[in-house]
Image (cartoon, rainbow over all chains, first blue to last red; front, side):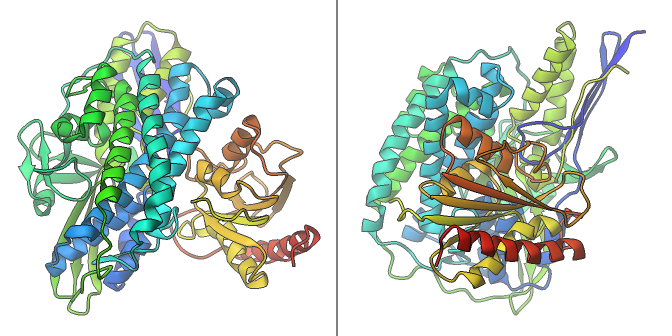
Length: 429
Length: 158
């Protein structure tokens, strides 16, 4: 029986590196393995014995793309442990800095990592030669997100202004005026982005996913809410460990997450969107509809549209937050350590990022658990590949490999958090 | 909103919690002690689009990053990126999809390279999660600091 193997030792245009192996015997896919090396358990060990106030800055170093997500989940988990609830302008500023991170992370993925797949370029460098204005728009859009993070976070790469209880210092309202002007440009650019990606051609693909995201009664989720799914999950963040499990799998030394009851699940922009469409701003909803999306999107190849819609929302929401901002009297609330365990889960650009910390009476970390979004999507990505390859066996092998890689990139996997390096090629068995 | 346009910019790239990947960051921090003023010294994770922004408006730019090209650990590579393209495999051990080499080449495509762009690569040995540099890399960091300080003086800093 004729058999072939698609083996990708180096997956291009995903954050970090990983490897992909697909085995085909005759007309049957017999194996799919997404290999991930080196789980970041270093940080969990590194945090033990540290003071609680060091945690946001240390966890921010896990990922250069989404430091805010780690800071926010860390702060919320520790505040949960100490019985603190953040409200008012400090809460709003946290939403605002998160808007900045979504804008920069999504713009990077949409323009520099994902768009080349649809326009037929090997990478953004080659794409830029033919589409310089699109690439420049993407870079400026990303920069607008960076500027939010820089203004509130102190630095855009490893922000140092975020702390448990709030911020070290907060800006005056007038410091936002130039940023607001740029964000108005960015919102228009985001709408143009949605129109641009809506013209791409998407492979037919659809699966009955279990989407998991935060859901909040009043807003599109960033920092708070219950963990919900389209298949009946509806739990508080502190019930995460009773519902989700991380397995070691033999082909990868990373961990794969699954729901105890129902196995694989899907986190990230498409899950957020499909569970919270009604909470998007009218402008973002309209942009989605005009791009041909319904309130639920099940084709992961269309995630590029969903990401673009979320950029519109993040710009729109950032402008709303800046408009209503009044500088708080104190940049942070007072924090008193106590013996406790705290749980935090926030919506990183790539999906839910879960942190749990056990602390002693001096506020030292006794035990830490960090689950990045990408490790939660690994099983779902493998599932997509099983189905995608099985239904596309007749297309040429080099094209099939390209589309397999694209199927992985749909998830914007941030393998630098979930792991370190991935690798890729195709060869006959 | 835009910060004043710095003329000399040094960017240390890497992650200090990835062992030798912290080499560029270490160089940046040591150069900061040498040049307390007159030179803008930045630390970046290596995400490429941010690098393009970091050097915007600068007349003279130096990038320092860890490299894994197959040379022996501690080997120092020095490239004039205006004159030569940066091999995309060169900074392979960055954890970013769009990293130093891609940033330089994208900026070249868009005609956004700074007038002078010097790239130092320090051959790393260990990129596992953890803090601290390998001995050969530590030595190379010291050597790059010395040489980079001369480069900066030659470029006309105070």
